[in-house]
Length: 112
Image (cartoon, rainbow, N blue to C red; front, top):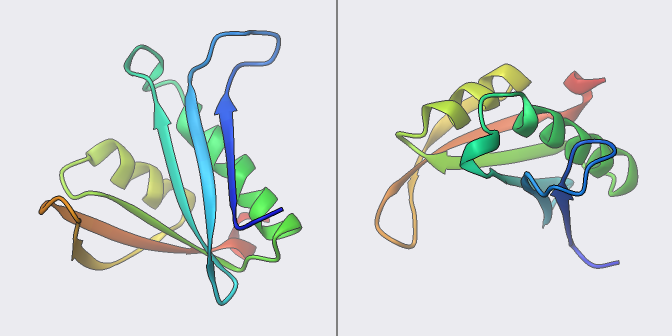
């Protein structure tokens, strides 16, 4: 099945696409979690719900133990989401575009 899983985010019973979520296998029982929620659907728990589903899938179906979550350092909504999931800030790293990412890690057994 490969090392990358991507899903569209929709509400149950709706055909409206709210965004997307994905996990990418990084090796060593670790995945990168990434998500986007379109602006008109933000601040309603959409990203949190999608992230939890994707992380539980990664743990159960991919054998993942840990997730890495990177976001632009000034993206407070994503920083708060990572912290709300139980992720721990581990440092900053530069993006390919020259910006700065805040990097968090999350041990998936804490989601159970």
